[in-house]
Image 1: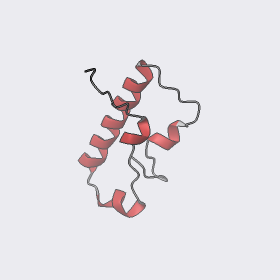
Image 2: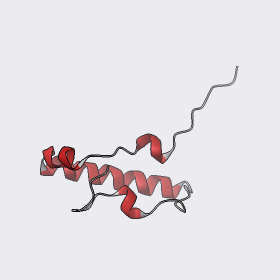
Image 3: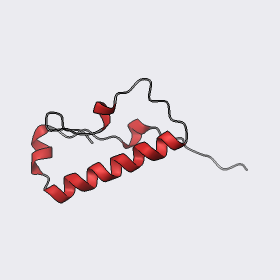
Image 4: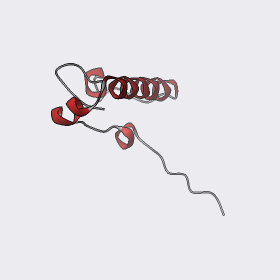
Length: 68
C-alpha cells in the first residue's frame, strides 16, 4: 500500500493575529514569530512556491498590520 502524503500550503501554516493579540506578545515572542515566518518563506521559495497571489506584506507583520 502506498503512503498517503498530505500536501501543506502556506495558508495551512499562516495564522493571523488581531491587533489585541499582537500587543499581548512580548518582544521575544514577536521576534520568534518573525524568524519562523522568514524561514518558512525562504523554505517555500526554495521549493518553488508561487507567490503571485500574495504580497510580502500579507506574510510579515509591520507596525500597522499584525499577522503571523
